[in-house]
Image (cartoon, rainbow, N blue to C red; front, side, top):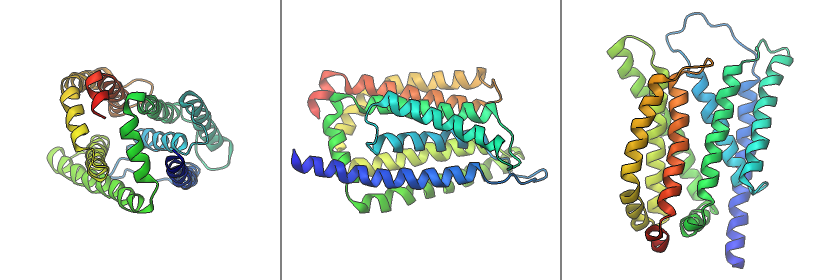
Length: 262
C-alpha cells in the first residue's frame, strides 16, 4: 500500500505540472488580443477547440489530486470557464463576451466530468491502478503527449485537405473531430499495451460493441437536429458522444463478468 501511495503521489505531481502548463497556455490563448483577419481559407473550429481545451483542463485538474471529488472539480472548472470568458470582455483585448464560446467551454468541462465519474467506478480499480503506475514515471508523458498532439494535427490536416479538395469548402470542425477520435484511439492502444491490459481490453470490447454502436447512431441523430445557441453540430455531437461513451464504459465495467476479470 505504501508503494502504491508513492506511485499515486508521483502521478499527481506530474498531472499538477501538466495542469499548470495547460492553464497558462490556455489562458494566454484566450486572452490574446484579437486580430482582424479577412476571409481566411481556413475557418477555425473555434467552438470545438473551446470544448476540447477546457475538457482537458478539467480532467487534468481532477487527476492532479488537488480536488478528489468529481462534482467539486467540475464546479470549480465551470467557474473558471465563466471567469475566463468574462475577463476577455472586461480587459482591453478587443474580445467580446461570447455565450457560444462559454457554452462550448462548459460542455467540455461537463464531458470531462462524466469521465471523472466513470473512472471512479470501483470495478475498474485494477485498470486504474496500472494506469496510475504508468503515469508515475516520465517516459510515458514524453511519448503520449507528443503522440496525442502530433496525431491530432496530422490526421486533422489530412482530413481537412481531403474535404477541401472534395467539397471546395473549409470543413475544419469535422476534420478536427476525425483527428481527435483517431488520436484517442491511438492513445488507448498505446496505454493498453504499455499497461499490459490486452485481455481486459478484449473483454471490455466484447461488452461495449453493441451499446457503442447504438450510441454512435444516436450521436448522428443528435448532429442532424443540433445547432442551437451558436454552437455548431459537431460540438454538440462530440459532447453527446463523449458523455455517452462514459456511460457505456460505466455500464460495461459494472458487470460482474468484467469486474471479476480485472
